[in-house]
Length: 447
Ligand code: SAH
Ligand code: F3S
Image 1 (cartoon, helix red, strand yellow):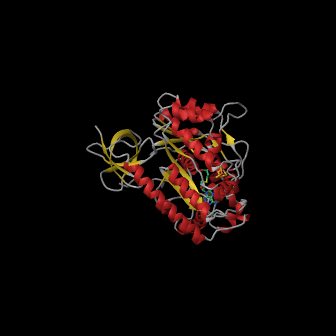
Image 2 (cartoon, helix red, strand yellow):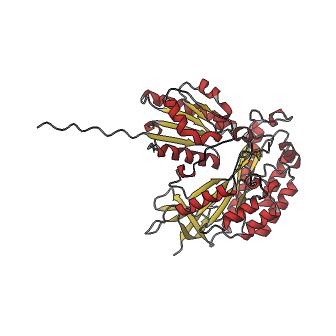
């Protein structure tokens, strides 16, 4: 008897996405993953197994941009084993480099800017027909398919409410790479949030470079109205938003943060510097006193509010006295977290032309002093939390076996022993803080 020939099953096609940078890029990666999965292409954690590799890049500082090119060089080598492999450059470096990236990296197949993410499926199809596509720029019409976002495994549902930025801070490349500001209509935002709540998310994170500058397109509503509309949706346990621009906070927005219990008592409010002269040259549009006053109002509205911030050290013209002003502000405000970097000159921005560029060694030394100060403050704040109980949203597994991680409402990381039954990812569980470290809290689950 002759055996019937059995056809070998088709090798599943796999994709691998590497994401750099901010929450916007995280969400863009979820959108690209979703589009590929709709075509039956599945994710892999091993780039060498992938048939499509996407590098979702960040260009906010020079170092991140340099790394993109070296990474593309590494991925290109996988084409020796897999001739059908496609490599795409996405994100802010893609927008900035466009055609140049294709010229510089021979094995690169396509380039997709942040405003063209919704077109990935067509771009891949065009590449398969031979075209090396460059999809950049900021078209008026953009595709955003809320059903094609791969959110699985995530504990929070991210929703863009405003794209781009019109602020033009003198150090920042984002207005070039993410384009002009565009608010999404409230109705679209609410539809997407409802969809995520139906899906089972407890936590919603609203995204925008200047999230509190949202305005209803062609209407009068502002971010305070949007917060109210979203916070009152049934089933929403936690609402967060990032990033708030200090100057755009109105008293009504401050009041909303105090009014709705499910708005998390945590805000990221970049200050950048504590010296007025530096803030002016950065084009930030507020003074140190105005920033401190806003913090005062926010804390009056919401007593348990935790604040984190971004700081740039070594901005052109920053004197030792200016830097001391920044240290002084950090001491005064007592942030729950500080994301600080040395200034990095970016192409097409105004700051590289300013006088008084700072020696990198001086900037690094200042950065270390800032970190040392902040570590002490953070440890002190965290020690005050020992003994308190919090509901944490479970975000993943701890590094040690048997440990899980969660986020408190004030967005601090707490690790806790799973106990006999691990808490499901994305669920809410109650813990008591047992001990405090600079960057995390150790907790015990409370029955
Ligand atoms: N509105 C966005 C800004 C994106 S850039 C947000 O706050 O998320 C994020 C942070 O990167 C900025 O707040 C700033 O502190 C830092 N940054 C931006 N450009 C930089 C540069 N040229 N050098 C160093 N840090 C920079
Ligand atoms: Fe950049 Fe300033 Fe906008 S930091 S993203 S230009 S608010």
